[in-house]
Length: 73
Image (cartoon, rainbow, N blue to C red; front, side):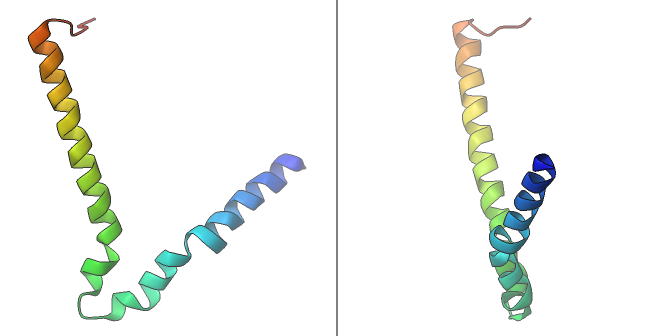
């Protein structure tokens, strides 16, 4: 009973609160001239963060490879 209420609460938290900005983007901003670009700004932001983290990871990997401390197990 309690577990069911917790999952219902989590579901309502996402659908009624956390997704409201995306609903606003979908219903009003997406109809504008640059709607596609504005609607996908979140995706572009995630892509930029992913690329920065990947570049950092590769830089650290190259550093450990040069030092010979990379674990190749």
